[in-house]
Amino acid sequence: MSNLPVILNFLIVLGLVVSAILAVHFEKLLSAVIALSVTGLFTAAAFLLMHAPDVAISEAAVGAALTPIIFIVALHKIRGGDDK
Image (tube, rainbow, N blue to C red; front, side, top):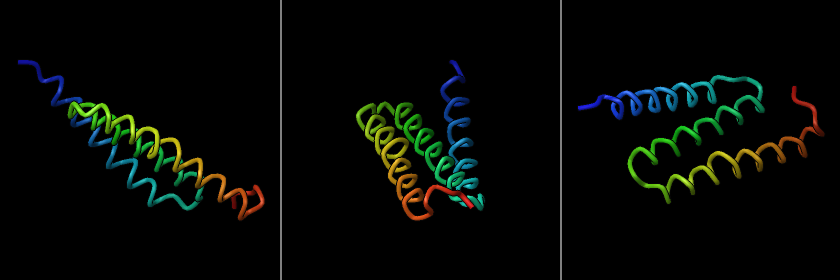
Protein backbone atom coordinates (compact mmCIF):
# COMPACT_ATOMS: atom_id res chain seq x y z
CA MET A 1 0.00 0.00 0.00
CA SER A 2 1.06 3.51 -0.68
CA ASN A 3 1.64 5.99 2.11
CA LEU A 4 1.18 8.95 -0.24
CA PRO A 5 -2.37 9.88 0.94
CA VAL A 6 -1.27 9.74 4.58
CA ILE A 7 1.78 11.90 3.94
CA LEU A 8 -0.24 14.37 1.83
CA ASN A 9 -2.93 14.59 4.49
CA PHE A 10 -0.30 15.22 7.17
CA LEU A 11 1.31 18.00 5.11
CA ILE A 12 -2.04 19.66 4.47
CA VAL A 13 -3.01 19.56 8.14
CA LEU A 14 0.42 20.87 9.10
CA GLY A 15 0.10 23.73 6.60
CA LEU A 16 -3.40 24.44 7.87
CA VAL A 17 -2.25 24.69 11.48
CA VAL A 18 0.83 26.78 10.65
CA SER A 19 -1.11 29.25 8.49
CA ALA A 20 -3.84 29.59 11.13
CA ILE A 21 -1.26 30.30 13.83
CA LEU A 22 0.43 32.84 11.57
CA ALA A 23 -2.91 34.53 10.87
CA VAL A 24 -3.35 35.09 14.60
CA HIS A 25 0.30 35.98 15.21
CA PHE A 26 0.85 38.67 12.55
CA GLU A 27 0.59 42.26 13.73
CA LYS A 28 -0.09 43.77 10.30
CA LEU A 29 -3.67 43.17 9.28
CA LEU A 30 -2.87 42.67 5.59
CA SER A 31 -0.42 39.88 6.44
CA ALA A 32 -3.05 38.26 8.66
CA VAL A 33 -5.62 38.41 5.86
CA ILE A 34 -3.18 36.75 3.46
CA ALA A 35 -2.44 34.01 6.00
CA LEU A 36 -6.18 33.53 6.45
CA SER A 37 -6.50 33.12 2.68
CA VAL A 38 -3.77 30.47 2.73
CA THR A 39 -5.69 28.71 5.50
CA GLY A 40 -8.71 28.63 3.20
CA LEU A 41 -6.59 27.09 0.44
CA PHE A 42 -5.33 24.36 2.75
CA THR A 43 -8.89 23.69 3.90
CA ALA A 44 -10.01 23.35 0.27
CA ALA A 45 -7.16 20.91 -0.35
CA ALA A 46 -8.22 18.89 2.70
CA PHE A 47 -11.77 18.69 1.35
CA LEU A 48 -10.39 17.49 -1.97
CA LEU A 49 -8.51 14.71 -0.18
CA MET A 50 -11.76 13.70 1.52
CA HIS A 51 -13.38 13.33 -1.93
CA ALA A 52 -15.71 16.31 -1.52
CA PRO A 53 -14.96 18.40 -4.61
CA ASP A 54 -18.14 20.47 -4.36
CA VAL A 55 -17.28 21.59 -0.84
CA ALA A 56 -13.66 22.18 -1.88
CA ILE A 57 -14.73 24.47 -4.72
CA SER A 58 -17.03 26.39 -2.38
CA GLU A 59 -14.29 26.75 0.23
CA ALA A 60 -11.77 27.88 -2.37
CA ALA A 61 -14.19 30.47 -3.72
CA VAL A 62 -15.33 31.82 -0.37
CA GLY A 63 -12.50 31.08 2.07
CA ALA A 64 -9.56 31.72 -0.21
CA ALA A 65 -10.90 34.35 -2.61
CA LEU A 66 -14.04 36.24 -1.61
CA THR A 67 -13.46 36.76 2.12
CA PRO A 68 -9.88 38.07 1.78
CA ILE A 69 -10.99 40.43 -1.00
CA ILE A 70 -13.74 41.80 1.25
CA PHE A 71 -11.26 42.21 4.13
CA ILE A 72 -8.70 43.96 1.91
CA VAL A 73 -11.30 46.35 0.49
CA ALA A 74 -12.54 47.12 4.01
CA LEU A 75 -8.97 47.76 5.23
CA HIS A 76 -8.35 50.02 2.26
CA LYS A 77 -11.52 52.02 2.94
CA ILE A 78 -10.88 52.32 6.68
CA ARG A 79 -7.22 53.28 6.51
CA GLY A 80 -7.21 55.16 3.25
CA GLY A 81 -4.81 52.71 1.65
CA ASP A 82 -1.94 52.73 4.14
CA ASP A 83 -1.06 49.63 6.14
CA LYS A 84 0.42 50.64 9.49
